[in-house]
Image (cartoon, rainbow, N blue to C red; front, side, top):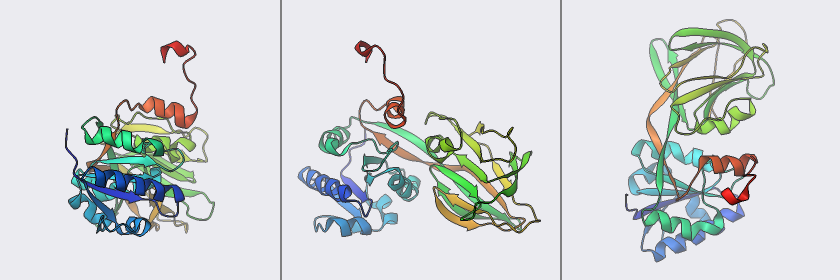
Length: 296
């Protein structure tokens, strides 16, 4: 197991509990004689001269581990900065559901101690890249750990599009949009659209239509290596938007084409000992526990 000596901290602003956990983490890591790095926003929360201040994009070259304090949204934001450098991340949950942030605030010292001593597991989570195809060229619009979403923007209105998978026409659809989600994102927005829960180890994507006009239109699961193409009709005045993990990246025009594929590099997500995806589902989604408590 890798020994971690240069550790980055990223905290979600505007959350009182985050500051408490960041200060606790900093004190713990300094006592462990670890070098602590923080991005500029986190530095403003800490006001700690012992931490090295870097930009978010510099975290990947400065650190061998990044600890994210916040919710899943904070992890989504950090993932695109560190995935390309294979820098592993682990999360302290100060959010709501917390499928990506395993450690509870009162477990910080014990769980991080396990990780620093080499007792952890690493899970690779793939991301999606989306490109705008135009005049034979492709422009990279963004990356997403959870999902790429085609949606109408601020106005609630139907949009039209055509879907191709591996250059094969699938359907034309009129709906509120389409969610293309990774297994990581299957427990997020896609779940609310009726999509299936996918185990994180699966090499697959789910395509979940949003309020389709046709009742026969259902989520489809495809291979993770599939090439997803969305085409906006050349007729019509509606301008749908493209979002990556909730961040709007592009406002589409008539005739636009988009390609969504698996990103070449993965996010390395670290879990403390005894992590279980199914236990997380029981906890976060309210699934039932064992009827016979003696078998827990």
